[in-house]
Amino acid sequence: MKIIRWLDDNLEEALLIALLVTMTLLMGLQVFSRYILNASLSWSEELTRYLFIWSGFLSISYCIKKWISIKIDQVILMFPKPVYVVAQLVLNVILFALFAFLAWHAVTYLQMSIASAQKSPALGLPMPFVQSAPLVGFTLAAVRALQQIVLEIGNIRYFITCGKIKERGE
Image (cartoon, rainbow, N blue to C red; front, side, top):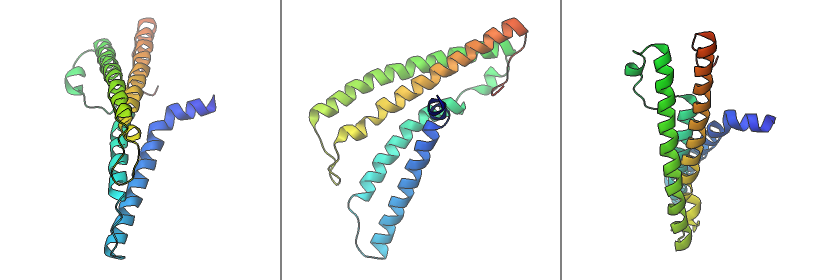
């Protein structure tokens, strides 16, 4: 149970840190090899590009989890607290529907990638490893949006019973 709790709290952040550190080290190695050793690495830029793609898709769910996605807070915050909570619930339902829809289509995209059996030019890496990033990212984003829906429903129930809104993190 502790592992599941840790994954829920830290999965995206740990993966994003690992990807960023790896990209930084790879580009540092490439610069060192090119300018100090006068020998360029043919694969480092390609791998860094693929890691960047993965980090982009993983960051979607991280932003939803941390509640730092782009939204129209200034307009929503003008409403009374109960309307604000309902608006947040509606927003999260829309986000869940969007990312579930995108994940569904990412499956088709991944199936086409698997069928093509294409490999990356420099690494010879099977492209489905790279092209599974949208599926993983959109699925995690849908899960995080679903978690936010559950939190907002709990907040609405709390408001109905106690007459006040819980602040985030309370």
